[in-house]
Length: 391
Image (cartoon, rainbow, N blue to C red):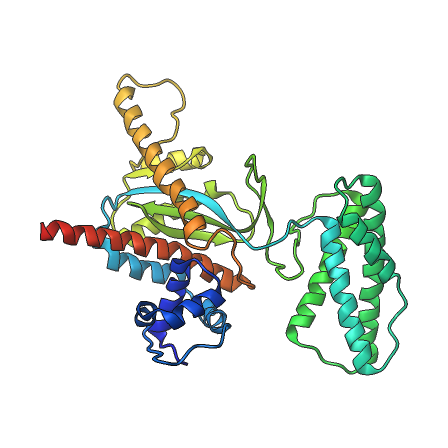
């Protein structure tokens, strides 16, 4: 309770401003008076020894985050420094979770290894014998497989079949233990076991039929993360939260965030509603890439007289030259400021890899990363305004 409500929020902003780990942030807070003043505390000759305090505050704040309400408050505070409230650009990006690349063999081995260790601990506590299995044999086989440079199908298929068989045996023994003994575990244990059972069913069906897996689980620890196909050359698939963002004069706001893949082209109308609810002004100019240019969206923007940079269909009008110049300016604004902000947030505001452990805390992490970048941009504009007044 050393941090006041104001100080807890300030600490979340400070983490993304400092772009460092929780432990490093506490170390800097202990030795930096400016950081202490910002977080509304005075340590004097004391030191904070609890490295988990940042994570504890994040877990406390995450369930009560109301993105739309908070963003309206922020916009109302910043509106004097935001110009062109009727001009909006929109695009989507993915903020990746800290996750190893999830191959089938890695996923099955992690599930097997975790469940085997839990069963051994349970059997030891109950004083009963552990079930016989070929765990050590397949552990050595998996370690040898993971060191191979070329993992051919001749090696992958037998290992996958064996891990599925071993995992099935452990799942059955775990059920038998719970049915025959009056034992109680923590909630996280039951959740993890349910996730492992679902992984087993998904991978067994995929191994037998080769059918595409719906709602594929890629991590036993983060069962909410899904593969999101982005179609990039360097990184065709990303694992994390997909965010549809709108930008008003260089300041970003979250329109929609989801760990499931979605088509951002269907979110254009809701983006305009969100912009108008923030600014209380009708949107007149909209910048968006080609995925938003569906017939439904074209009809909507034409009906509401919104100028876009969508490529025209059909025969071009005679006065298309002026319209083409305006479309080029809108496209440049979106491609430079909005897409440039994605890289800036990921590289400088701790959004390159989200290291939070739960769905709610990951959303909170992304929210504070985006709005820390916004706050610094508004701060620079305030400073420039003060300089102009002084001159």
